[in-house]
Image (tube, rainbow, N blue to C red; front, side, top):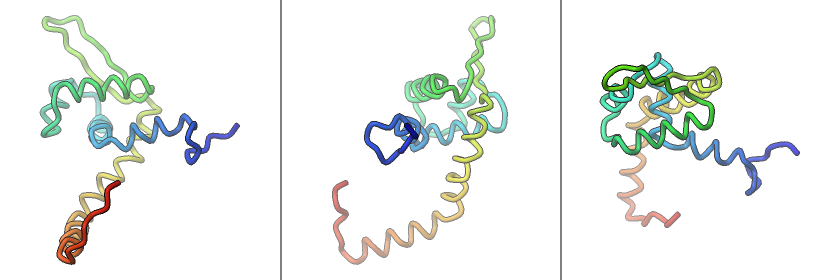
Amino acid sequence: MQPNAYTGACPTRVVLDRIADKWAVLILGLLAEGPMRFNSLRRSIERLSQKVLAQTLRRLERDGLLTRTAFPTVPVTVEYALTPLGRTLAETVDALRLWAEAHITEVQAAQRAYDGRGLVMPDA
């Protein structure tokens, strides 16, 4: 059976869920530049908690998108790097970040215009 993300039981939805996560997108973008340590990732992404970073890294590792290498130092040094599969995804999702940065003023203007009409946002 061919994968079909529009079908409720399709396993591709798990992958889409992962790449729709803003933290995963930002982590993949940083790791595309090269391997990084946990604390470097944490310092590079403002407002990302240690707990959420650890959870996101574990999920990305489980999906085969990155590797975790522990070095026997005191304290232990841990480095994360993209796998070849992760590199293909990072190239794709970084385009979303670039689009968001390039078009944020247009999006904000549209939001202000919408809000100015007094419309109520529908519940999702």
